[in-house]
Amino acid sequence: MPQLSESYLSADTLIIGGGSAGIMAAIRAKELNPQNRVVVFDKADVKYSGSIPRGMDALNIVAIPGESSVEGFIESASNSRERVIDENVSRAIAARSWDLLKKLESWGVCFPKGDSQGYEALTTHSKGKYTVTMKEPNLKKILYDKVSQSDTIILNRTMALELLIDNDRVVGAVGMNVRTGEFIICYAKAVILASGGAARFGLPDNGHLYGIYDCPANSGDSYYLAYSAGAELTGMECTVCYVIVKDINCPLLHPTMTRGGKLIDIYNNELDFGKDSLISALPVEHFMKHGGYIRLRLSHLPEETIKTIESILFTTERPILERFFKGRNLNFRNCDIELAPTEFYLCGGHGITGLRIDETAASTIPGLYAAGDAAHGQGYLTGAFTLGQIAAESADSYADSIEQKMHFSTAKTYMKKIESFIQKIQNNENKITVEEFEYKVRRLINNYVAPPKNEYKLNRALEMIGQMQHELEEVVQVKTTHDIVKAFEIRNIITCALLSASAALERKESRWGWWHYRSDFPEKNEQYEKHVIVKKDNDTISTCLKNTVKINFGGGKSNE
Image (tube, rainbow, N blue to C red; front, top):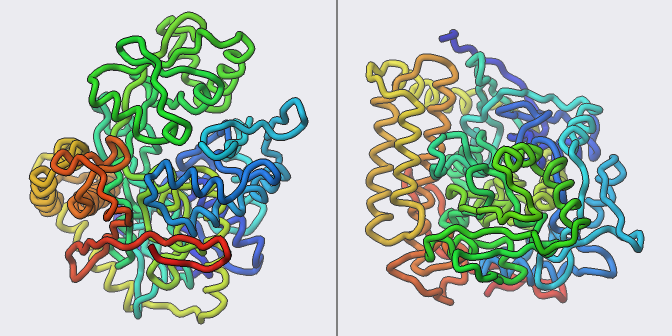
């Protein structure tokens, strides 16, 4: 194992995560002030990291002038999440969606035109057409080329371990090179968290730690960093799970159902979940309660439509699907495609989990902002891009208002905490590998944190996962720098499990289909039409219910 060393740098804005939200934030920060020093920590390589490592087939929230409205999207989003959303954040995302599309188009992103020369918009919401077709297999490369035109400092293979907090505000972060073990301490006036959700949370049916639906690098780093720093998080009880192609972690519903596909149950009946439910938990709920596979049927569609779907799936969305279907002799023209649920995970973009932010992307800690799956905005790819821009604008304004300082004593305190953790796991003489221990943690999450939930299971989860926090330092064997990085990731997964179980105990009702189904409280309780907030309180988890923030369309805010 290499000798650990330290290096230091400073930034006006530090961005943690180089996916869609993080790169867009870096681009916007440099647009605003080319002279400012912008640093990006990315655990992988920004050229192909994040949940959208290559291409995408749609921009799923666009309020097209004259065709769809911001208010209509807010209503649809509220319906799909049973009114537990922050309308201010949703409005901010939708209000900037059209300008976002035009900006991406100016960068060379392809948005096909329909017969009337307007953009091809699909109906995935109950209140209008908001999903605009995108045909761009090189989306991430376009973003990478754009950020590379600036002097943004990109530190690839750098995992953020702790945020630096001084006088109740963020002043930077400690990172670690995942290959060399070098510590990087970055002092920053403002920090943007954009390192995704907790994709590695529950175990998938295939039993492989990294064989999951979302980006396998996303181990809840943003949530740990925010919680450890004292920020408020929300939606941690919303354990997301989607229906995808059985035996391969590839999506299928959006490109097909929006073009006339049918969901068929085990009794050969067609299932109708409604428009907003296309992106909700109802297909998963049906699967779990009826104990059978749901099938997708396209054989009734015209040949031209099937070819369009194949073009999207096999070129832009998931090219591996073509080889998968051919290997099993599956053809949309004469075969139904079996679907099955993903593992349970925590996500801001597709769920409602993440840092509690306002419409400026600001968290509850001064100087700390969030975007993408790290934030609770529930905005998909559009939300990642727009909140990334908004976070950059807010961070830039905040950074201009304060003076840069080198907080050496603060960094030393956090380094002692990190080095103590590493020293403990390095001195272990046990033979339990980090992979075996992660499997144990995530199997426990499947058994006690994932639905169906109840008070006994959730209390048992808190007890057992609390014990695993100690076991991580006492029984896990590390041999390489990579093992140390995995141990930090397990630390983050365990923290997310504790937060999720605590929030689920607070929400004494069932919501979002199977995502938060409590067998001891099976009905929805209107009193709980609120956000569950979790935060750190003297090294313990504090939970509470807070009213959802609504907008009076006349301009002001009101609490409900």
